[in-house]
Amino acid sequence: MMLYLLKSSLCLLVLFGFYKLLLENEKIHRFNRFYLLFSLVFSFTVPLITVNVQSELISVFGQQPIPQVDNRLIDRLEPDKLPIQSAYDFSDIAGFLYWLITSALLVRFFRNSFSLIRRISQHRRVHYQGATLVLLPDNCLPHTFLHYLFINQSAYESRAIEPELFTHELAHIRQRHTYDILFIELLSCFYWFNPLLFLIKRAIRLNHEFLADAAVIDQHQHVIEYQCLLLSKLTLATPASLTSQLTFHATKQRFLMMTKRTSKTRILITGTVALSLFALLTVVFSTKLVAQVPTTPSQKAQTRIVQKPLPVNSSKLEEQYKDKLVISWSRDRRKFSDLSEEEKKNVVLVAPFPPKTPTDAQFSDWKNPKLFGIWIDGKRVKNEVLDTYKPTDITSFSGSFVHKNARQPEGYLYQMDLMTHSAYERYLKEREENPLLIVMKPRPKRQ
Image (cartoon, rainbow, N blue to C red; front, side, top):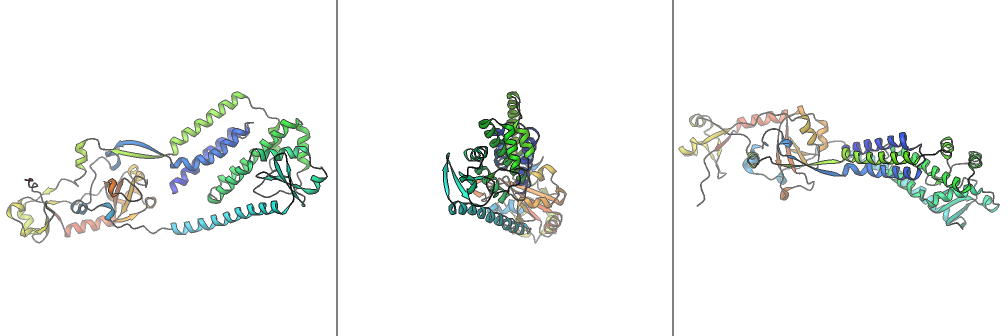
């Protein structure tokens, strides 16, 4: 989850930085509106896109055959029979705080929405040029919500509202700016911890004003008179937060935009660069799902053996391990002293697997939950737990491919068993007390 949030935030930062540097001051308001809204959707979805990349099996587990834990090689335990446990962390507390704040913001969002709906139902309504005027007794700026235009009743009845203001607000309604505001406000309720959303919210509202101002200039053709009208309204109160309204925190920027011109060539170049940026970020921030294939058929067979068993003189074995259990190809266990002389000659001692520290690249790959299920010291943990470890904290590791019929609901393709220093020392001590003895006699041929 942390990796997803980091990717989406970085992607949004790049896209918004591009907007501030190259797009905001250009007179391409419709394109900018699409760019800002699509940037939000793109940033939160591109990390979820998976790109299949094929590589050799050896690149996943290192430059040697995949090691297997000895007892799993003998008992052939399936991954779904292993105990699944989660390491203790603070995710529950963080999750509780997240949903507490999110719930409070959602309550405020719906309270503001219902407040506007209640105002609509409680006051007189008049149909006007495809919109619905809501006549209010209080002195306020004209503002819109969906197809409703809120204005002062006495000003409307005395025809004191300038036609430019009607044109401005009707532009908000006809271009459906309220839907943009509802979208970014609702998104902010869930991603309140990301300050970029508040900056983008301001950029979207400012772009709405540019679009509405352009509609006024196109219809009335009086830039200076319109600018003077806006200045005369600066002292009026600001309406509700979910409405499209006349706002004056960026009046100077709006005035400059009214007289600005952008050439078609510049529009074409800027648009091409923006589309190229989206394509580049798709490659950079999408999730790479690596599909491993064995390099050769012989290598696939290699992955079934831990290492080549080390033969030991049978007489020394009998003297040292006569009471120890020995495993045969039939998987039965007998004491060494109970074996036949021929079987004793074929007994070998399998040495403990040597210590091995993963590379930084391997350790980073294991954090991908779509590819790897992680066990640390025999306990199932979430992949994010690896963020609390370093590669040097792992003394030994082994991996196995999880076949389709044995996969967990998470759907990972490989199971990795990692051992810390203390677990590896316990493993060596256990192997010293209970050595792994195997009768390396060929399987009897089937009749």
